[in-house]
Length: 287
Image (cartoon, rainbow, N blue to C red):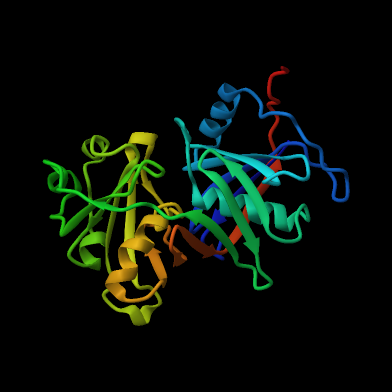
């Protein structure tokens, strides 16, 4: 089986957020028939593959029969667990489908969080259509400032879909210089903590910055998190007075996410580049 490593939310190798992508039921050679597996392989095997790939997420997808509400089934695993939503691995999967000639327009994915759409564009970008996170202001939990290493200006719960706290900090420099206690951060939410601040200089091409810490699901710091921007877009849109924004995730690998808030949906646009295209030698166990 073909296994790709794709860097998402970037146009340069070795930046953005890497994701593994493994497709089932597709031809080994271009032009062959696309099949329709009835199910994914055993969950234990999927988790072992994700642990072996050892990136923030590995995406697994297979085609669905025509005529339904979606074209492909899609799941995502971190090295330690399955997650409900992942933006960068969805972008990576859509990139693989488009560059392999398996789709020639928008593609609909059926995932645990519902139906997600990815639309490739002629300029090489891909736009994802995701549900907007329902932000609720909450008091800063005891110990959060100490664990994060900075005093929050505000804290919002991003809801069960992504399971994060959005923590507003004083400025971009504070976000960039964070050295949090990852073990302590794992206790504050279901997935993790999104630290964010307004951009110091919007003329540099981004409106806000963020960093995402998810030690609870085996990721101390995620390089570029598409799903986080479904919470960052509704957080920053009213503060900046517009619904189309560009976020810079200021991790060591870094990446840009263009987000457009459309009420209950958020559009996430970025680029991706395939860095590794190889073969997985360990086949799944037979059912």
